[in-house]
Length: 309
Ligand code: NAP
Image (cartoon, rainbow, N blue to C red; front, side):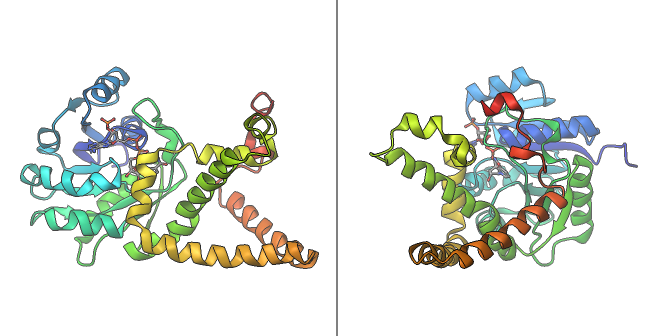
């Protein structure tokens, strides 16, 4: 059972970091009899062809999803509604339609209306990524040990949910099932806000007049460098995340601003105790992340000496 394919045919719509990593992981684990891939730009199709991670490649989503047991939307979230509308006539009865989008309520809102009777719609979000994009960026190990969250709408066929859960476990992930709204709140603080802060701090440094760009780069190992990695993430993907998780992000941003004001006030009034207690509390969170196997405890995030120079 564990070595046999979970699906006869899997169609990946979008062949960037996440789509190509899924293709590599499926091949590594023998999870699909046939992996079909679709991407809309001919240049990307050619680049994907050179990487050889799919059994068939298509410039049209309809033929790509025909006869597929599992169809996964792996394009930016803002494209899902149109893509779902395009593939609806080609989806086979009994197929699972899923996605990897970083927000979930908006995906249910945009894709839900196009899901035909007899197709199981189970949104999903693998919590794994890098700042790289495109078909060359993917690798089989991306999802190993990471969480994948499934957000089936109420009434979804439980057998189909179990099948998709099993699929992601075979890909290498741990799987949680939760409500889409709750997912969006959790991810707003653990992923979306950190990205917004990184984009903002790098933008602020770029605008400074008293500190030169050369100095910012030269002394970046002081902490700035770690923000630049996150702030190098794909602009299209992140634009769509913020546009489609507006409420949760604004709610978390409000909380963040309040806490920032506490720190600002403590610095202004030289209140070392407030600062010390705050930083002690946050240090424990870091230990929790490492203990949960979601990062390495090696100094400097495990970077080798060469990279630090
Ligand atoms: P990516 O590397 O930039 O790849 C995006 C893919 O979508 C490419 O194949 C691209 O094709 C295609 N695409 C872009 N615009 C399109 C459009 N208008 N119509 C059809 N196809 C289009 O992105 P990614 O990092 O794999 O992200 C894909 C999805 O995964 C997003 O929904 C994102 O929220 C989610 N996700 C990302 C991460 C992460 O860290 N990167 C983590 C978890 C989930 P062309 O090159 O042909 O335009």
